[in-house]
Image (cartoon, rainbow, N blue to C red; front, side):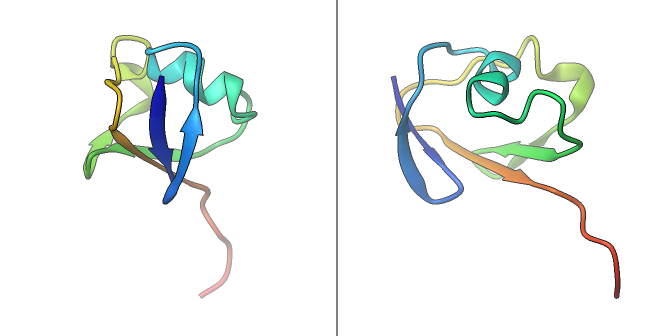
Length: 65
């Protein structure tokens, strides 16, 4: 399935957000996620299903100010 990840089209195997994050190498990372502009909390990632063409944003917190 093709989705957009941080502005880049990617091919992913699974539709579940937690599985996609694992596939993309974010499994253990502390990141925030949004699908089509809507925040998806950590506790909802296992239930959140993506569709072809969805936009996934993955951001890591940064220190500093």
